[in-house]
Image (cartoon, rainbow, N blue to C red; front, side, top):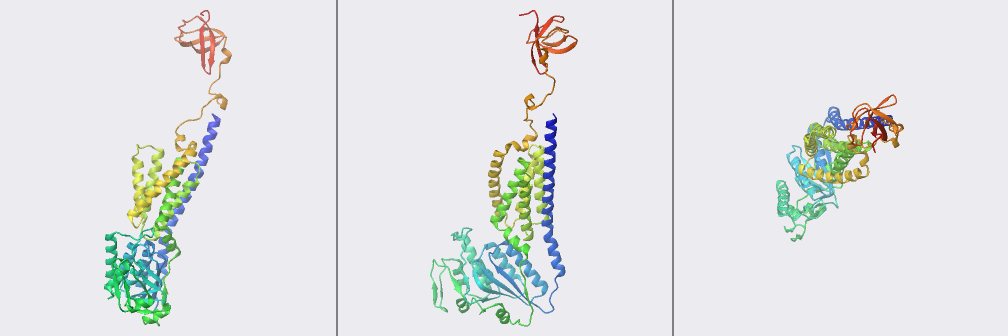
Length: 467
């Protein structure tokens, strides 16, 4: 049995190493989660408003999504704390999520600080909607605005009448709010709306989407000025003597914008689910468990920075993982497993901005993880967690195990039955008492017996004078 004990000690040592690594990964996860709060608190305490009301420049670049929305909320809040004179939205984007653009538009409309959008590249799709919500629009020569048709994730134009009508009405409202031609805004969003613009001698027929150059936008009233750079925009709003403050994305916010993209979130959930599942069902590696925790940690870190996730979401998720681990080692007839799954799913979904998207990402990640885990279990099933509860090793003499002394030396020896053999009993061989058994015959006490077979501790006898 010594070999078995040595194997157990090795398993316990490996298990202790894995536990230490997993605890270290969880500690890193907690640090990552708490760090953003410390960073925000420090920036709030060290920031001091300038003596004169500043002009605040806020970039609206790249894709419009939930991370950008949270950044703009933070930037507008800081501008309010600075008592800014004016906000310049530096826009260069090909668009993005419609829902995020609508939230950003509401943020701009609700601001007490005057805003001007400076389009220095492209304000396409949702970007044009953001620009139109600003009080004024300035455009760089060669820039454009419009082409705001709704498209799906694959870039295909959405044909749903309800979706197009809703987005078209949003564009129209933004134009009317600032006294612009609402028909032009509708033609930017809906190809079924035609418009004639005599100011530039141009007509957009039905079936086409409208986009305006800087010069065209100026002539039709969709831009108040053309500016070569931000300094010219500052002069246009008559703020030359005021300090200019640029609010940039922090490194954490850039990272959060990347993390909160749907495909990245799905990938992190896949890594998290697959890594933890492999570590639970095929223990001994350690690396999958650490990668799984890192995947989940990055998911929650990004959503926390973006302002979607809170500590309560992380606690709920951690509780789910804990309950699933307990279910694996302490059977509760599935109760703890179900509660753990509910807690885990709830934590992931609650941490996301869009619950429907989060459920879809979680579902896809789960399906992919199941496939990967099944493949790993197939090739590493000998290391599965169930092997901890089933004794699969055979304790044979060929493997060096001897649980009792074999009595092959008794074969052929003659002795006397001390007790009746029915069919087991005790016989005396010389001076040694031995437990014996017959092949089913009854042998009275006192009869002579002979050993015919010995298998480990089982000694088979028969009556000596009986054929």
